[in-house]
Image (cartoon, rainbow, N blue to C red; front, side, top):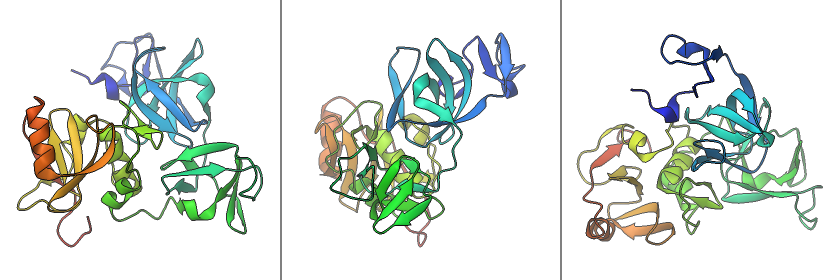
Length: 278
């Protein structure tokens, strides 16, 4: 059985490489494109429920444009769904990512000017030059201190997650405006150059089964939930109890989750061996 979240096919069209595997009226190679708005909801169906979100500058393959919707597959994790067609433009060549929790784009290299838009951690931009404390991009000017080169990954997923402390919980969210448990883990890992799927059930296959005491960067899983171990006694996660990204004692969070009927920890996964960072 195919996972519709990862299968670029909707009955009318399917990716060319799926010919012979799934039924469709036509098979297409798709076109490379880029998200053109700060945050775009990736929907299960046109006008349907939100599955995930994509950020400015993230790459997608467009397989169909129809009735104002683009049927796409995200490059970062293979997630498939529908975007507002106006949120998609031609392929881009980003050079930098937003490394701060959030930043602003200004019409001039002047922080006193009224901002043009706000961008979340993880957004991607093409820097063409620098002017003092600002990076010039096709969209405007962004503080250099908020950016990092794409080719230089971070080394500590937990430190990335901590930048989003207090971010409101949002089901299917992937931005500093709102994020859920798997979105937080994905943002943290991708910033460190670690491939990461979009949902917690898929993330449970990452790394290897962890042994010994909890270690910073371990992933803790419950039914439908995931958290990052912050240290031997605490974790960080986006959760509906606090409706925010928060730090909790591992024992307290585990007891609370069990008491609300969601069971015990089902897995603990380790992404890197001792001596290789978090």
